[in-house]
Length: 400
Image 1 (cartoon, rainbow, N blue to C red):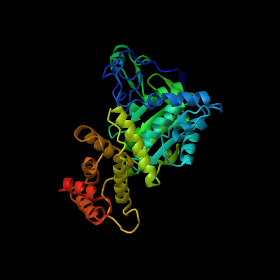
Image 2 (tube, one colour):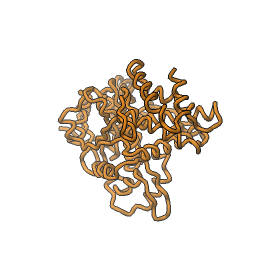
Image 3 (tube, one colour):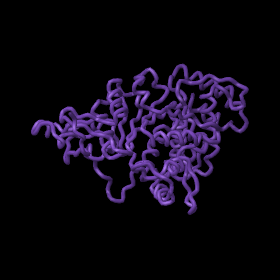
Image 4 (cartoon, rainbow, N blue to C red):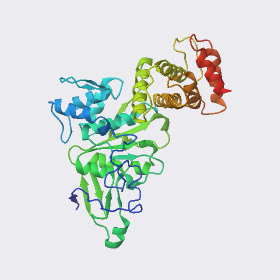
């Protein structure tokens, strides 16, 4: 007979060999690995969502008078408002974190308020990780209980590991056990995250079945179990391009409610997303603002959307699509790199010369097939487009 276990005690001084796999797939897993804190006054390169948007979260909590599920920081309505943006009664502006159908976010938030886990599915670059992080930050105030899925993710990253120094010295004990992010989330009633679920080997994936169906994590070495407390849930992400890599078993898929995140519906939506994220990243990197860069952002988005869709924006010309995804995330990367070039090697104004090389790198992944697609697009579409002569020349120069 098993005995319900209390919150696992994390060893105070684990070594790198003490938790094989426990550190694998985790991001700042508190207590699981030793990590150095930033120096006083040092700005981290990428703050966690709960830190970057702390003021908005605090304002939402203060203004939220709706019912909250157990151990949630705010109500489902407030979580959806945090993701989609809005204006609070006191005038506080909540910036949108996700631009897309509100119903999708409402379904995702509602799923987390039930006993079903949430699977965010979509092509690469559709903000699955971004949405996952912000959902965890809004619901639990902690987005760091993370398992990063890879082909080498071991079962210990999902269940638990051991401090081998204590294990060899004293045998199996609670002090020797190193909890995974999922075990901590179960014990504390928090939201855990699993990124790229279909990259994880199938036998490791299946270790989630008992956790999600029975809300229990057995620890047979101790004759105990960890039972999930109210508030616990799991958000997993997977992308469509990984179908056939490590397909989810039907038993595991049944434990999830699936929400498919689409690509931005309109060019204006995508331009807005790219502009907002580039501005946020630019401020974090101390890059100057690019007030005159909107035209180049729109060009990058137009190129990506047309090649992605296999059709020009006016619907008159069919195009060949390259092998890459040309996602919104890649557009953000291209524009950010261009902004850095303009800041450090130009006059600070984003121009075609600054984004041309980035576009080439994003489009031409297969040097043979993709280069043909790109050259054809340049000569048949870009060259003939009014107002794009400077862009055409810049792209031709880097493509030569």
